[in-house]
Length: 163
Image (tube, rainbow, N blue to C red):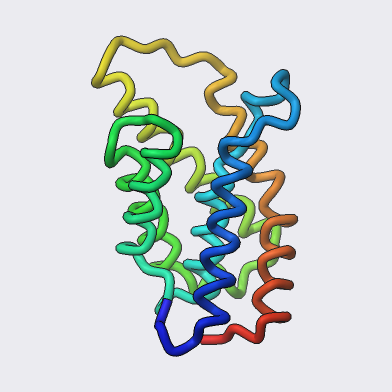
């Protein structure tokens, strides 16, 4: 995010901070395994909406903060977020033209890639089993994408943030 537009910078930081709060917050402990990766959803949106301002390096730093926040291996989420941000930026022109259901398929692909990388990195540390509940955040994130997209677009329009 460029420094010449402080409103854009504050909106970006506020949405990422809110996503981090939702990432660690547990409304109902029984539904905690369905909690999607809100940070990745926000990064996908900002990478599609403002690819020149929210880049791979930004996603990498947000990933490092997420690693510290969640207590995972340092660099784990940084790699995942940078890769997903790269994919989103590479396809942003096409994704902007897609209707919301097709965007959901792209988001599902990104979330499944992120979960697969997460499992691979955790399996390198210690033998790990892959329960079905491991994939729930990817599917719940796909279902949450339309809501995230509409809310973040409304914030971007109200704050008059454009390319």
